[in-house]
Each structure stands twice: as C-alpha cells, then as structure tokens.
Length: 253
Image 1 (cartoon, rainbow, N blue to C red):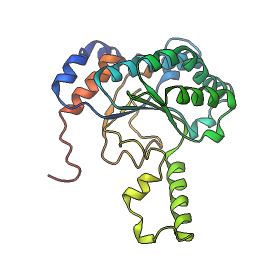
Image 2 (cartoon, rainbow, N blue to C red):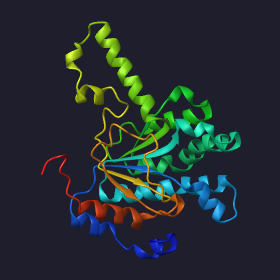
Image 3 (cartoon, rainbow, N blue to C red):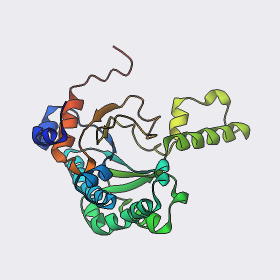
Image 4 (cartoon, rainbow, N blue to C red):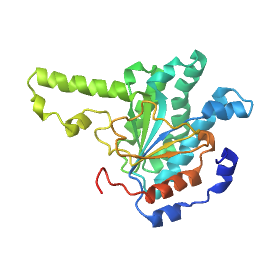
C-alpha cells in the first residue's frame, strides 16, 4: 500500500516521456478531491484547502496543455455540494471570481478556451458572471478546452436529456425509434466534446460521485491517494503513462 508521502517521492515521469510513449488522452476528466482533508492534516481551515486546490488548477491545466490534451474537464462543484455547511459553500462560490481575475490573461495568452457544464441558473451572480465573462473572452481560442463542471450532476443532466427527447417525440419532431445512443449524447451538455479517455480522482476515494455517468462508459480510471493540492504535474504524467499501457478494446477482443 502506497502512502501519500511515498507517492510524492515516487513519480518522476516527464512531459517529454509521455509525449514519446504513445497517444495522449484527448479528453481528461478530474474529480479534484481532498482539499478539506489536506487542510485538516495541516491544522488549517477547510477554506485554505480549497484555495490551495484552486491554485493547483493552474498547474495541472498548464501541464495538460503542454502535452497536447484537447479537453480538460474539472469537477469543481457538484449538485450535491450544496449540502455542505453554508460558510463553506459561500467560500466555494467566491473561488471562480478569484481564479479568473488572476488567470484569465494567461489563459488567453496560451490559447485556452474556457467552457462550463452544469446548471447556470442555480448559481449566484458573483459566481456565474466571471465564468461567463471568461467563456466570452476565450471563445475564439483554438487550443485546449478548460471545461469547468460547476453545479453539475450527471443524473440531472440525463433527466434533462430524456425530457428533451420525450418532448420532441410528443410534438412529433422525431420518432421514438430514432432515439439511440447518438441522439442521447447530442442532448447532453457535453454534446460538442469527445467522451473522456481518462478519469482521474484524487484523495484515495474510488467512486464516480455522479460525474459524467453516461460519458464515462469506456473511460480508463486512475485513482491517486494524493489530496488534490498535492497532485502535481509529474503525477498527471504518471497517470497518462499508465493509460498508455492499457488496451482499450471497447468490448471487443
């Protein structure tokens, strides 16, 4: 069993190695878990962990962009996270403004396009506005898509897709027999994105937590014992190196 300290010392994979080893995942999705426990281990408030986690977004996005990842989707705030204490939720809702105020210029300079999935209507204005402004400012960028899942829940997303399809059938815009996997995918919030090739979850937890349930059907998983603020560039590259050794048969031989 690897402890988090041994894991930190263990990895030394570089960008050059993963680029030369084989194919780079087109779409990487990350469940950024463990901010609160990272802070508790250091005797700090949970907010300190979330702030450190926010700072780490930049480093991992830079690392992914460096090796040619097309899409990086980050699970930022789930529909279930509203159950947390109100002061923690309030702090989390302030982080997008802090992040984009600091990073938007560099994102523009690096040709990164910001996108978002999730329920915008459920977010306060001071959270939604900086996200929308960043999406608008980077919409013409042609490099990596940095996709934030904010107030996102996969079951809610799928129910909404089902309702859209049912409405089209009811109004005779399409036949029931036309509904297939492709049509369902086209009614999800990720309709313009490829399905993730690699899912990473930090903090040692090994579950999906209502994240991209439809889209992860044939995704490779990587679970790290590290808390998100401790998850660095070399750990991302190690996960990709492991991904490159796997045979993706999609149910075939």
